[in-house]
Length: 118
Image 1: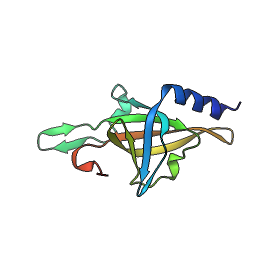
Image 2: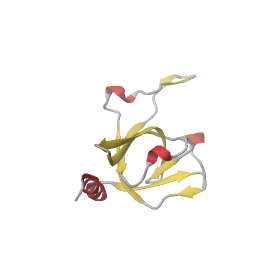
Image 3: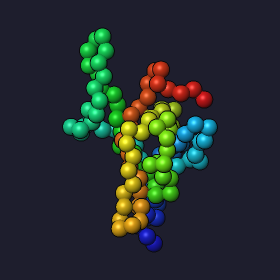
Image 4: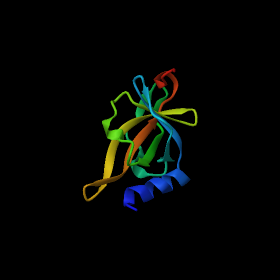
């Protein structure tokens, strides 16, 4: 069994059900992990300034299976999990040699006016 299949089996066990939406297209359910980055020093990717001062958005680390290429999604793509919507701030493939073994990305949780209605 190759490395990508081993990681996918672990994501099937530990991950939660998410959906990718890009325009009119919606993926089948995917098992992936989403971890909050509030403990990381690098989690302040883009501070937001409001009338009341600076606030920071919620960022998350996405780890998903090799067979769902998040690098090919448009910038309007949205990930939906447990009633929450997220946008990808960056997406990368993790390679072992020439083989993609999983995908990783940074997600920003969408709130208020940013949320798309379906």
